[in-house]
Amino acid sequence: MERLVKGAWLVRGRAGLSGEGVGLSGGVRMKEWWVQVGLLSVPLLAVYLHIPPPRLSPALLSWKASGAFFTYKHQSIFYRDSTGAVGSSDVVILLHGFPTSSYDWSKIWEGLTQRFHRVIALDFVGFGFSDKPRPHHYSIFEQASIVERLVRHLGLHHQRINLLSHDYGDTVAQELLHRYEHNKTGSILINSLCLSNGGIFPETYYPRFIQKVLKDGGLLSPIITRLMNFFFFSRGLGAVFGPYTQPSQAEYWDMWTAVRTNDGNLVVDSILQYINQRKKHRDRWVGALMSTSVPLHLIYGPLDPVNPHPEFLQLYKKVLPMSTVSVLDDHISHYPQLEDPTGFLNAYLNFINSF
Image (cartoon, rainbow, N blue to C red):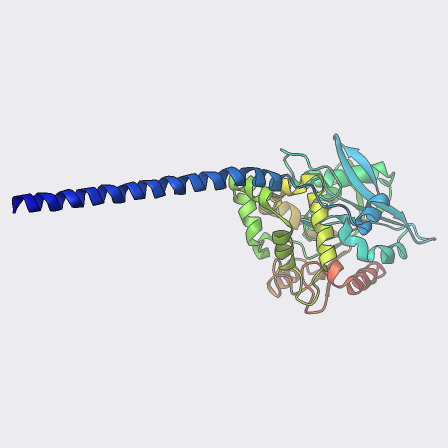
């Protein structure tokens, strides 16, 4: 009996050792498989992260060819300057939003040239065709100084300027207005200011989730910006357009191409610090609007999820009762100049012709 028991234990022991051998062999094979996947993924990821920007579409090529560049502190800044209406001396400067470019104004450009003698737009540093340095401390103050330098570059520093702004450009316009009201050297002589769908009040501003992640992502932000692609960009941007006013696929590609030019996707997280700057300098920038005697107007797309209705509009009218307001159709969202160019242009021209 003792021999039988010993024999049984011996058989079990051998079986166990044999099972362990199979397990060890399977584990080695699994480990080898993961190593192979890893080795294959590294070059593929490297290629992905260095995909060149898309080629400029004919529309973007035409936009760029119609513009020029000037230098601000070793940075090349793109701008467009069109001569328009004969018999008018009025000048308008257009300040675009985040994360797009001066091309945002393309749908109302011709209409503006029929009213103004000069129609001017620029790509802020970090946007569009302008330089996108990194590392770099992007700030609203720097962007305002770039606009002032452009005005001097064009010999318009003694000319009264109408400002038309959107989103990020609203905040740049607020800083320019503050400098003008406080007689800062080099400030622009502002004739009028028209804002549109910008985060004027931090308390009614709701940035998108990805903006919050990139703004405060720390070490994660550079990874996300490198992994950004057309699919995620178009999905994210589409969320701030109305359901009936979505850009075409070609228009999304133009926006993405402008971002990717000069590796602009890699500086998005740095530019997004403007959200923190708005909070820090709220009194300065809202105060500029409250104290100005410059004709002030707001064109508002009420479906905007970033500056939602009615919360934003109620606060705007309460804080700035002297401003006039144009509210566009209910289905117009955060990009009114692209979603309803005719309505936007008519609202702006009605404002300009009212004083």
